[in-house]
Image 1 (cartoon, helix red, strand yellow):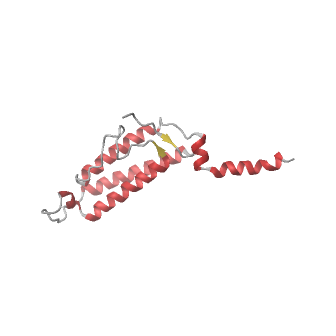
Image 2 (spheres, rainbow, N blue to C red):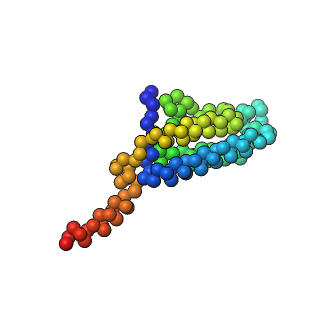
Length: 147
């Protein structure tokens, strides 16, 4: 599979990168919290050892992961979070959270280090995602046009 090209599709690149760094910092904080998890009781006959992390912690992980995916989908085209750069990784839900979080942080660091060299938003994305500024410019120039 071909490598994916990153494109920051939001008009304000600095704000996108700043928000990305906030999310990455959330993951680093989450990793510290995960490393403090004490094994929770679970039914060893019917559940795998991932349940030792606790259902609340598993839910919190899923929510952070989905928020991250939503942010990336809305702001960075071509990101490979959860899939790997070449599409060959999976989200292994049979691993304990300490390993899953480590993998997510690694992927985010790879994406973050690549953002500096990512393509910027083209006119198509800028108009699609921020149509109001273009409409405002047109409206402001209407009196000049009809003079």
